[in-house]
Image (cartoon, rainbow, N blue to C red):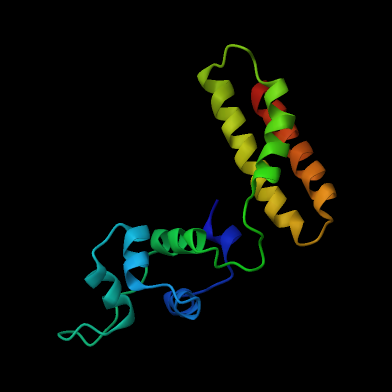
Length: 146
């Protein structure tokens, strides 16, 4: 999943403001990003010698949006959504999984989950699960035929 699917936020400032509004501590951000807390402090406070704050990288932004569910437009993934898509896909998986079929299954699962998130805002929950599962199955079968 890309940040384009995860967030409508355009900048480091928007992501950091959302984290601050949620009461997320710098130590929590540091843990998600895998950096020391002073590196997070540089995101919020200008560095003395340059007078500038550090910008989030694209990858850091994606990690934070995912970890703290910053995109209110998309529901968080849950067991029901994942189970529904897996239940549709697994019966189609071969008994002996080749590298190609494993990759196709993984890609179809990701696609189905992305579809579920994009549909959930507009469709009833049961309908979203059915559509996302159907789309994942179609993607899987198409990938196996290539």
